[in-house]
Amino acid sequence: MIIDAHVHWKGGVYPGDERAGAADLFDALDSADVTKAVVVGLDPHNEDILRAVTDEHRSRLAALINVHPFDVNADAVRRAVERADGFGETYIRCGSSQLPVEYFRPVLDLARSTARPILLHTGDFSYTAPAMMADMVSEYPNVVFVLGHSGSLAFVRDAIEVAKAFPNTYLETSGMTSPAMLRRAVDELGAERILFGSDYPFWHPAVERARIDSAGLEPAASRLILGENARRLFDF
Image 1: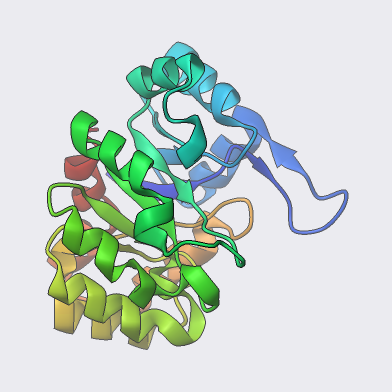
Image 2: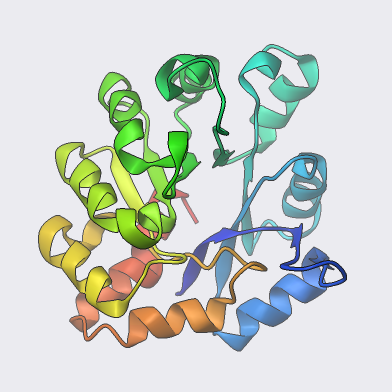
C-alpha cells in the first residue's frame, strides 16, 4: 500500500492552473499507484475536505484541518475536530509577535487532548525554519509532529536534527532536495519516521515518488516510507 501523507484538495501553481476535487486528485494519485492519501487543510477548505472525506471517500482519504489558535473554542471548530484525523498544515507567517510554541499553544493543547497529529509547514524562512519547532516538540512529547517538506531546500539537515532529538517527530518528503538527502535522513534517523508526501497539486505524486524510488534504499525502508509509517500514524 502506498500512502501520500500530504495532498491538498484545491490549488494551483499559477493563475488559471487551479485543480480541485476528487477527480483531479485521484487521477494524480492513480498515476503514481498511490492507494490512499492524507488531505491537508488550507483555509478556507476545511469543510470541503471534511465533507469529501467523511461523506464520500473515507475508504481512501484521511483529513487534517487547519485551525487558527484564536478559533480553537469556536463551536464549528469543535465539531470539525470530531470528524478530523489531525491538524495541519500549520503555517506561522512572518511578523508574528510570538514564538511558535506560544502563538500556537491553543492548538497544541487541543492536539494533546484529542491525541491527533499535527503537520507543520517547514521551510527556509522566519518561523517555518525547522529549528524553530524544537520548543514545540520538546514541550509536547505526547503530540506527534510531522515536519512538512522536511525543511525544504537548505534546511533539510536541520529537520533531520530535530527529528533525531525528539522521537515524537516525523519527516515528510515533499520538496526534499534530492535522493541523496533522503538517504542521509534514513541513515541518521531511520526509515520508521519518514513519510512520503507530494504536496499535490503544487508538486505531483509521480514526481515525488520517483525521488523515493531513485534513492537506492533497501526495500524494507522504501515500504516504510511509502506507506507503512503513514498507515500506522493515521490508522488507515
